[in-house]
Length: 606
Image (cartoon, rainbow, N blue to C red; front, side, top):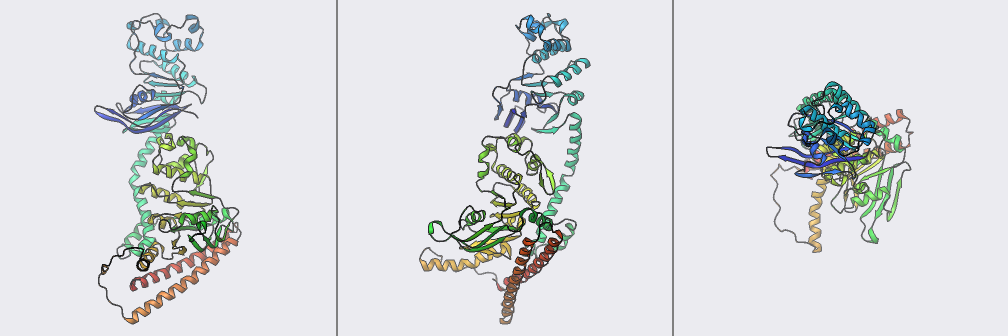
């Protein structure tokens, strides 16, 4: 459907109140829209705004070139000295209007034949209203805007008007916007509704009866809003209590209370089901890097001897300082860069999708509106195991119906990022690469993106400086340190400790090379702690070394299980289920060892 007219970020101020604030909406060809709302809420102002009779105080009204608009106001501007004849058809010759069946039908339907040569000044208020309505209806308009058209009409005339408007244009063409309190008329004529309230316009599908049903549902949902918020908080709490954050802050975390609150909250992700679906989509081989090194123009290497196996359903996070080579690594993984040495193998079934920092994916959209962009995706796609339309997916990502009429170029940074993510998901990739997806998003929208990713089946690679996002959506983290890639069994905490330990060595290198000024002030002393005895230190070091050896052994077993999963037939769900159980047990053992390792390291101050 072609866009006819609309408004973008409009503000309308009256002396005593603000009527509309940041209003954006659009009208497509074929629309039949009924407009309702409280008296004084802005319904007539909305028609005046869209017709061009009211200038906004901010924003702009847009209209496709060549579109004609006819407006019926609540008060007419007829010339009192004119006859009804002159008011309705002007100077049109009698043989033209008399031979026009549509004009004759309008005059008959509105009861104006007997008044044809009477002067307007001698008409009653109801008769003047019929004359003004006839004047408008005899015109050939692309868009008709009617403000209370049934006022002063009797039942036959109202019935005639409804039938006329239903058949005035062929299906899918023309456009009608009508403000009226006549509920039957709205149900008879309109296929969608706009409710004007609280400085905004809220759209509903269907006529007046459908609008009432949806409004009741809206009010019911509003009553459930607080409960939903509490459930979201409980979901957040569930992750906090089960994840690394809870372990790191366990002295402050009320574990018993938290467990009581989240007793019936399911795991954030069904790892087994997502893994099964990912294996079915990706097959045995996904991506493997063997002793990969890369340097620009044969200079100092950016990356050295990196070996990384990425399997179906893996969710890896990559951290590192700015300029460490994270984007270079992602390009090597995609095959967009050729390694200086080593090999990169990409499975034949791999379909990459990349959300870049600069949102290059949206450049092709140009001046298109959001509704035009998502209109190119007509098929329903799978998300969280359910079929969802693009519009439903956008709603899940915080887009309102009004946002659908915005040009892509005018969207905020956060809206562009969410739209780009949605378009990527609609392309149905099986390997998703996200480079700083949290930029420009507020906390609520980050939570929405995280929940969306929880239900995405495929391999995920994430680069972000957002620790919460990293720990929330990935299962394993890796760090680029120097030119090497290191696995982080202890997660982001381990990475931060590693940076702290390396800082002293780095300062020594600076002094030795004379490359920087280093403060000679003595470091601030940490609070005094009980000194460990020699025996305690030896025991703790043995615990550290033992834990590290056992974790390395377990990691080898985990890698072996991953290899067996890749070799298994994607349709052999029994084998995959058994392998997943074995993998879960190994991960559980590894997590226990990680806790032992963390406690020993903390006691030693390492």
